[in-house]
Image 1: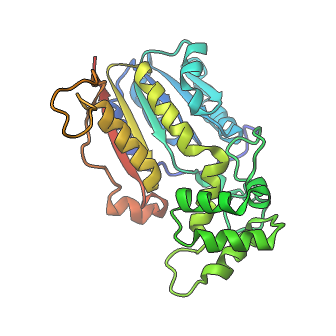
Image 2 (image 1 turned 60 degrees about the vertical axis):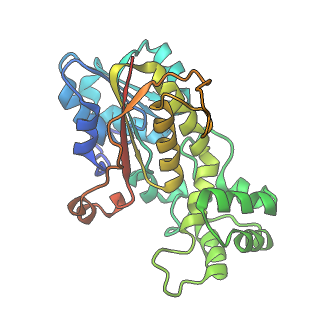
Image 3 (image 1 turned 90 degrees about the vertical axis):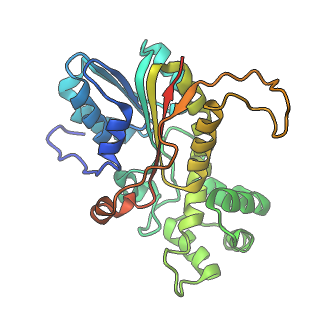
Length: 312
């Protein structure tokens, strides 16, 4: 990307709440595990300069290119890495970036990814069925749609898309193969569900399911959350912004488990698990965008933020 090219615009969700939740202070070391176009990272950087440092990670190479331009004047304090946050500990070990004062996960798909037709994330534009965050990985949505068995498709659409018509959709996908474009897949789903009185496009859940499957989003999130504990210093903050129930459930259960002093089954008279809590819940109730933020940025409407703090 040429430095004279205007940078893509992106409105970061729950910006003020996230930065305050991280307790970003001058001299702090922070990790943005989904640096994207740098919205949250820029706000964090403002708080931690001049002695603080920021590590930005993103699986999307285009996002990293944009971030490199945005933070070109801060190369001594900002480290950007094109990798998956599932490799969080290895990345921090390579760059000797630990322990840290805060870790942020913003799990939403970026405006740039949605608005770039050829990435195949949106059913509103004709594009190849891709949906990869990292173009270097092999599996695409087209591979899943055209080669997975009907039962495998049912599982993906039902579990990841929480779509109650998963069996009918999967059957029609198999019958309609080959399916090569986003619009073609959307039409296949629409033929099954119709559009009458639909608040959202009928293909929304199916597209989300395939995106999650292609990028192994839930598996990678679980792995990264586990690793984050080992990287946070005492009283370091973990802040996670999720956008659908599957992600939020993983974050909620992880934080509650790590904040618990006992993991024994209910009814156990004497604790035998020996679990030692590693986190303290800062936000017992989920934090949501204000009505004003939702009005100015409709894509924030489903966001949920949770915060936890590292114990000794």
